Length: 294
Image: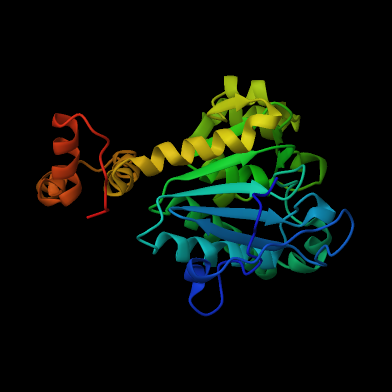
């Protein structure tokens, strides 16, 4: 379910994402017409928001090796953009992502060495999402399976349409989930739910996924993109440095290492920021704050 106006450049090319500030190229695909032979990572930006779309519609957005590599590149570039405040992930059409591209597996994972290269690329893409300083929101419709589930788990928030389905039935394919990719699922839902998903191989409904802590909330299918946009706009309305700090501190506090004296002092770096002064002034003057990211 991609937003309109996907740029088709994957946020790459000269000037990277910033080409969106000069022009936008709209892509319209008729059913069964103009679909790429291989998958793509589509990316566009609208003001302070970026939209990343998993696009391999002929295979329900199954993610091939090139898509994993490009996904990492796109996320690194997005994370370096100081104007952006939130990233929304979607899938092209009626699916988020139906997993990895199984047609590649015989060649891409023919040997241990080849399999390691393949899955290290997957892990690098997932890490780029999880470690992105920008808040990330996954808008999930249809199947969110295998690699699609891994991408969703790497995002900060997961909004599910009522018709979404979640799982990783790799036990039916004869291979386990790679440990480096299992980590995100395990950290999100804990060992009991991770075992249920992986051992049974059953697809969870959106409601079940919510009850088990896998998704943030469930919305009507027709409302998914609107709810994702509203969520991103609420995030963007806050001070961007605060959102980045919260992501950074949450990740830091999940480690077992006590905070150092330097880290405790660094927690008050906001005292010298323009946005802190603006936030206090806006509150006292009873007006909406205008944060500049400074």
